Amino acid sequence: MKVVAAEHVAAAAGQDGLPPPGPPEIAFLGRSNVGKSSLLNALAGRRGLARVSSTPGKTRLLHFYRLECQQGAARRPLVLVDLPGYGWARVSQEERKSWQALVEGYLAGREPLRAAVLLQDLRRDVSRDELDLLAWLAERHIPVLVALTKCDKLSLGPRTARARELARALGPSPERVLAISASRGLGVTELWRAILAHVG
Ligand code: GTP
Ligand code: MG
Image 1 (tube, rainbow, N blue to C red):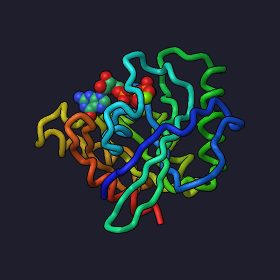
Image 2 (image 1 turned 30 degrees about the vertical axis):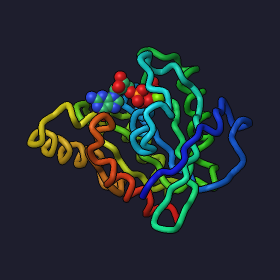
Image 3 (image 1 turned 180 degrees about the vertical axis):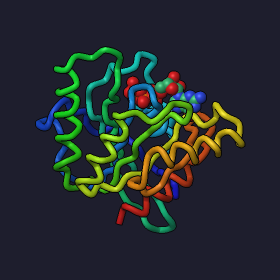
Image 4 (image 1 turned 45 degrees about the vertical axis):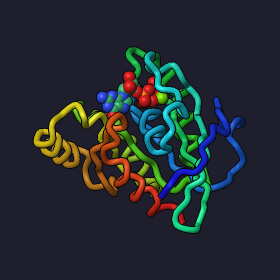
């Protein structure tokens, strides 16, 4: 599979700003700074497509990226959606609610949505936020792939042990749990394969 084109097509601050339903969509969600934008760039094979932030939690927008994927003679469009991160330090109840309205509003009612990729830092423990999100997605029958990010920070042995530990903590609802490094390109092919299985 080769990504032959990639472009940013829309940024939405609310339901009104969503682009009209089009090609299949895959949503990326996770804690702020977990590596969502970096993973999107790694999947697209384009370094500067999504902005990698040094100031976490700044973007409270949904970003839509349209890719053209070439497999043999077939070419198909696919949209990757970079959702705003959660878990910024000390946000108000108000801000939490507006994040929820934005993200859940998109996830709950989006016809082209095929699957969600939940990102979890390989070195961090799973929190209530991830477990709540997984339960919420399972209730709505949205398939979930988990990407354990920044796996380059651990050597192979500890990485494998940690991935197994986190898979247990995440419970039975994720369809796959994959260790990923956007910076080294580890696990990216496997994640692509799992994503494409949801795109008809
Ligand atoms: P927000 O948009 O603020 O929610 O962050 P994000 O989840 O999009 O994370 P982003 O991709 O901006 O990455 C955050 C930081 O983690 C950056 O400094 C990245 O360089 C770093 N990072 C992302 N992926 C990896 C990785 O695979 N390995 C390592 N070592 N660092 C990474
Ligand atoms: Mg980002």
